[in-house]
Length: 284
Image (cartoon, rainbow, N blue to C red; front, side, top):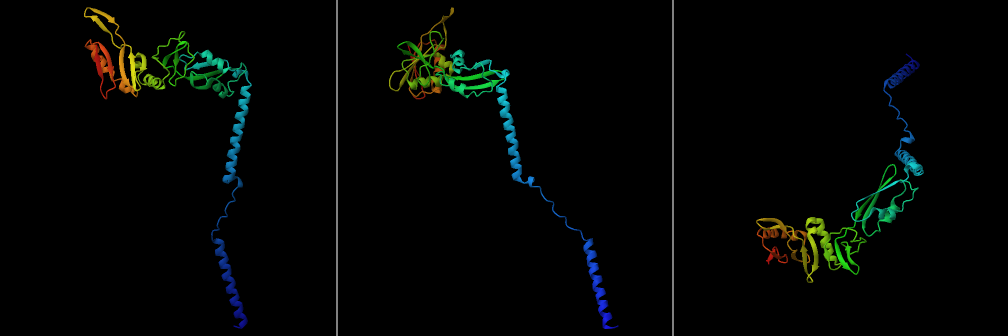
């Protein structure tokens, strides 16, 4: 075999090896090319889309409300007042000054602002009931005592403010206090919240010294005049002395003592709470 034949044989072998490698390459699995993501799938576009949707909803609600305000169906026809005790509902309606063309969906803030300055109003909230009712819920500033003035007894609240309530036309069963003493008025307010039945018994409260108080309580018990007479004998007012900082719980300590003395048909001169953890009873 000549040198030329040797060269041709080597060329054929190299060519066969290359073809074999190409066949193996064709048989090998090809990696999948990654899919291209849409630019709208990015977080930024999602946020913008959500904001756009919210804007559409708000705009629709706004224009719906504008349309509802112009409808006669939603005109205010009734005003309902809740939470009054001594305050006349007509006074609140007059203060609100609601126009006959006012819509139920108009802002109620200005109406609340007109009612809130009333001295008998502690707080006010106005809500709606379709199709045409405004509900005014009040927290009334209640009087706690009657105080003598140049024009007679006038009701005062716990902050020492005179309230525009006519005691002649209104049934006011309130304790009498000599002056608008803030400490005494606050004590009566706490007593009314904590022990309303005891508060109703208070006929008068006054200072007898810088740090001493005197309560006059209406009698809580009735007793027969004799074993043969079951009629009620009206006893006098119960006098109770207490320190200025007396608590409601401490005042209730008079109940068992009073009950025991009445059961024994003793005439109570006064009870004294000024001694620590004791109730001193003075018998007539």
